[in-house]
View 1: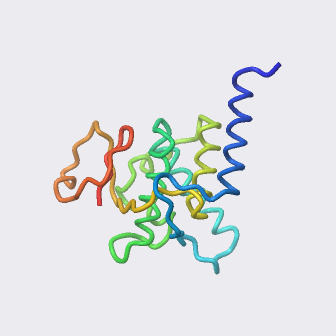
View 2: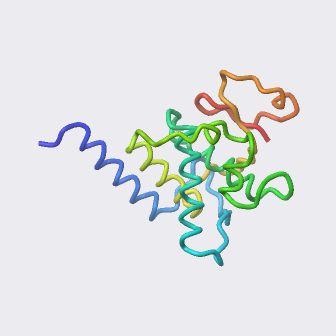
View 3: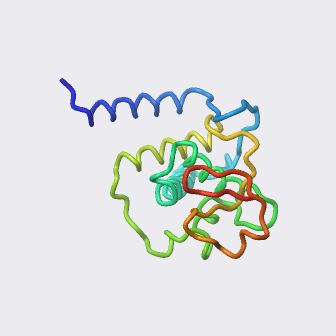
Length: 166
């Protein structure tokens, strides 16, 4: 008989398979597909970009609901695709100075299951099979902080403990 942990792991693997093979969008279906990783870069660089996105999902939204993790991933990709204000790669956006606080401390992954979930979400969001339609947020913060810049941005959504802005 399987214990509860192994059942959860099997359910997670089934979800990972579905996300990797089935177009799924949170909310209204949209045909737009992100292209944040150029096709002409090496497989090593693609893997590095996915690792950067997974780390941002993991460290910024590990305790958030599933769609909150997707939202954090999309903010990262929205910045990559933005015309002027941000770096043009996922890793460039994630490690840009003072953008995501976790990058200052070089934390390590401790929750392997949450890390696997972050990897699955990163892959699915980059592939365009998992996304929140019409989600144009470029910024977010937790409800516990009140950054000065929030006064100049428009709130587009509140998900879990995060407030997202355009």
